[in-house]
Length: 148
Image (cartoon, rainbow, N blue to C red; front, side, top):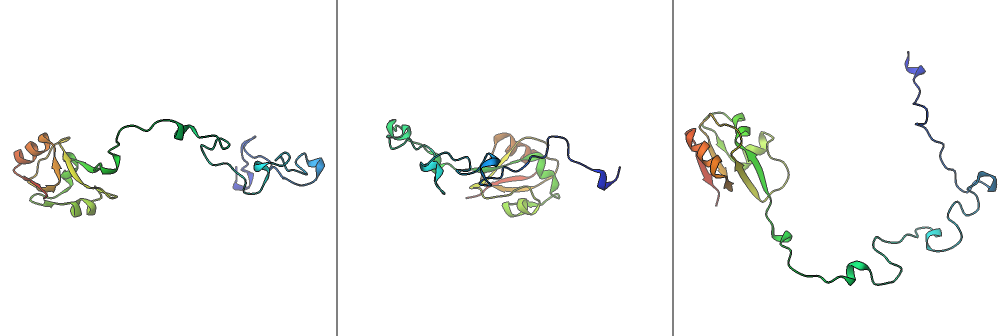
């Protein structure tokens, strides 16, 4: 078999529907858009949730309660096992985590979780620590520093 022998699988290629190419094509005259109306016009489309001028369902239902989503803080979660990449006696900061590729994107802070083992003495600077992470860091001889 050579490159010029390769063919797509049967049924993988479809003929393009050619609109407005005469009556005998089956898609002539109105080009499959029917007669008149909003959907027959160029650029004519109805936005999501539009109910033909009737009061939409989303506006008919009562709004109750308070959502705290706008004020929620999202923390980047880093496991202790990932900190093994650092050399002993290293300072682990948000900047150093980004340099090692452990932290990407924008976050409101960093939280260290206790999954995995830590065998090196590290000074870890983060916004939050889980209780197990703090214990494991201190057992390895390191310190957990909460950023202020």
